[in-house]
Image (cartoon, rainbow, N blue to C red):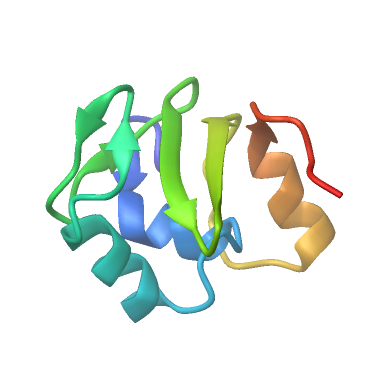
Length: 91
């Protein structure tokens, strides 16, 4: 269904990197999110497998590589398969 990509805000919500779809939309429009190094200012930006996302979350930076797109917002263990973290975990 999503061979060409999907909306970035929807992917952030499906991957559980955002608590709600409106929070994901706000993050996209805040100009704090980068997609493959490009500053994003619209939630309708398209994300595809292989893309790299980075954005601040609280007092840390999140950087992930998109592994897959999803059809729905599934449980946490399914959502974790949608991306690979590019930064080491902090204690």
